[in-house]
Image: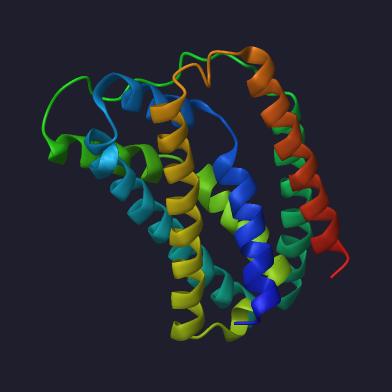
Length: 203
């Protein structure tokens, strides 16, 4: 994989994954009430689910690129439009801080399956990868090594982002209590996502 493509991929994913939304609010609330060790099965399941969506997007796009060239071109520019849509959604996102509730009690296995259900039940994750990947890589020529590099990059970004939120929740329990702070974070992320879309469109 070209290093610049991996950097752009990591940057866009960093913005999307780091934006404070319901899943982040649920994660922070869980850490505040039960500690960081309790969320590890939930996080592991989310990372595995993301890897499944990423793999599906890579191999599905590779098939389209090899078989239907014009359809692939349409998908590529539709992807740029979708990234701009995500930027708009981030800019206008509400700042409620209640979050989604994780299971209040139960085994680590239950938390793991909850994380898988949350991730695999959210097709927007695959939409993000479908929008992003055609704009930065030649998916028709992705090898197993390239797939592994993208997956490893994805895991490293998600682990880093989630670790920062867990640490922030541990150190500052009022982090998500301020609507103004959430609004500023959302709008910063929106600006960065729009910039990424513009950079990708000119590649």
